[in-house]
Each structure stands twice: as structure tokens, then as C-alpha cells.
Image 1 (cartoon, rainbow, N blue to C red):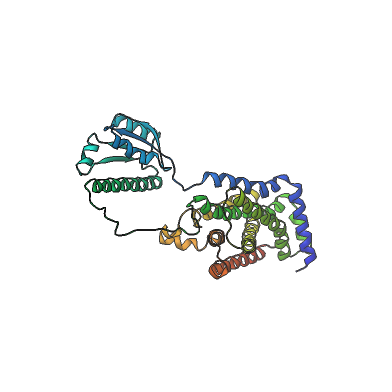
Image 2 (image 1 turned 135 degrees about the vertical axis):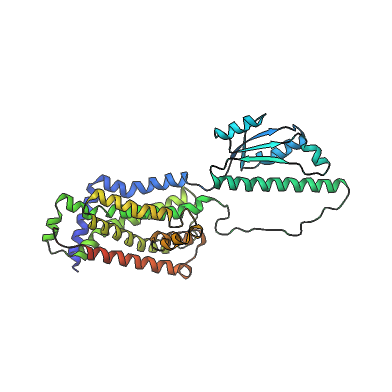
Length: 377
């Protein structure tokens, strides 16, 4: 392989990127835009669940019970209703996700030590949010019930019983339980995979469409030199995107980087080589920019978004799909990003994922070199 010819190809590609504002905009602006949009739009936190209440009791006890919901950040009282019909309409129209009905004999049953019933009607259209909201409501009801029992025991002059079991949870790696701390590191990996493959998927296909491939074939340049030359400019741009994304994650989304930044950049470089080589391979195989772009989106965005563990836990997927995820390189990079970002671990834990990313990069580069033929057919 001739280094001089490789540098010439890289310089030619670099000039194209600089002179084409669309390519440069795609390389720099789009990752930033996607990170901002997805970073703010994607959230797994369930806060301020809208609710309506039909308080048939209208007593101090019922108001105290309602205040347990409205006083938390998990629920937001939208309105008081006065019939089942109003409650159902609020849920049907989407004004409320949860409706609560308190019976008129609520205080009497509490005073007599009997079980008072409260009806919760939850919109299950969004099953995940509904499940979490029911869990929040269950905790509030249990706490209220415990307070009522303790007050009754004290009123009778008895000594309150201590709980036989006490749980003291300690959350590691994401103490504030914010979903953005979980989403942003994986989001960086997904965006880098999509953008990197999309950029290089146009390189060789563009040469065929513009008729400049004939000139390259007539030169002494070889397949390894062409592939490496095409990768170099976009590799530099990709690392720039990684640096910008990390900076945005740290200062815009306030996601802490607990691990080694140098290790993160090193693994990102390995991943970038593999994905860029994948884009070059698609470009060589397609020989058409439109088709190359479509192939890149199908082969990168969907697997990276759905099968990498970025949004959905792989352990919850069907077994056959879990096996398929091993073929998705974003799975390993997402695991590395979350490990370095949130846990601060190193190669002693992430070594296998890094090795698999290296093998992916070597395989895709070799495949691109073998696929490129200096022929016009």
C-alpha cells in the first residue's frame, strides 16, 4: 500500500467535504440537532400524571388523602368532577390519565377501623406509564394507611408496632434516577452509528454517479488505499462529533462522565472505523447515492435504535431477537458508553465488548477492500 496515494485520496475527499456545505452540515450540525431533539424528547420519567377526583365525601380526611397525591411531583390535579360521566369524559378526551373516586362513607369507615375503598381508574393506552402511575399511587395509599393505623394505635394509648422489615435502597450509578442519564450515553452511540454510515455511504456511489470513478480506476490507486483514503476525513469529523456530543451531554444535559475520557475516545475511534467502513461497503455495493442512503438507514438506524439495548432491555426481548442483537455492533458500543459514562468502569469489565468492536472494524474494512474492484462493470 502506497501512503502517498492514500494521502492524495484523503485530501481529495477532504476538499469535497469542505467545499460542499451540505456534507459538512450533515457531518456536524445533524448530530447536534438529533442529540438535542432526542435528548429532550425521549424521557422515561413519569411525572405530573394528570388526574381528576370525584370526592363524594367532602371531608377533612378525604382532602388530606387527596393532598397526598397533589403534594407529590408524580401527580397533578387537573380538575374536581361530580359524576362518573365527567370522570370518564376527562379520561376519554385525554385531559386526565387517572381518575379517583372517594366514597361518601370514607371517614366513617376509617373512624370505625374498617377498610375504606377508593376507586382508581387509569387509562391503560400507554401501558408503561399506566403501570408506573399505579405503582406510585399504591405507595401513597400504603403510606396513608400506615399513618391512619399509627394514629389509631396512639389514640388508644397503645405502643405502635415497629415494622418487622425495613428496606433502605441505595441506587448506584444514577442516584437521581433521571432517565436522561441513561438515555444520553446510548443516544450518542446510536447517532454516531447512523451519521457515520450515512456519510461514507455516499463516497464511492458519488464517484460512480459523477463519472469520476473511471478516472480513479485509471490511476494506480489500489483498493486498500481508496478505502483508507475515503475513511480518513470522515474519521476526523466523527471524532469531532463525539467530542461535541460529550460536551453537550456534560454541560447541556448535565450527564456526568464518571469514567476515563481517553478510554471513551479510544473505543469511539474503534467503533467509528467499523461503522465508516460499513458505509463504504454499502457505497461500493450500491453504486447509487439514493440506494446507498436507504440501505444505510435500514442497516444502522433501526438495529441501533431497537436492538442495541439503548431504549429497550435486551433481556426482555424474545430469545430469537436476543440472538440477533449479537450481530448489532451498536449493542457493544452502547454497553461501553453506559459503562464508562455511568459506572466509570474500565477494560477489566468492558474488555470483551471492545474486542468485539475491534473484530467488527477489521471485518468491515476487509469486506470493503475485497468488494471494491477496479472495473467499470
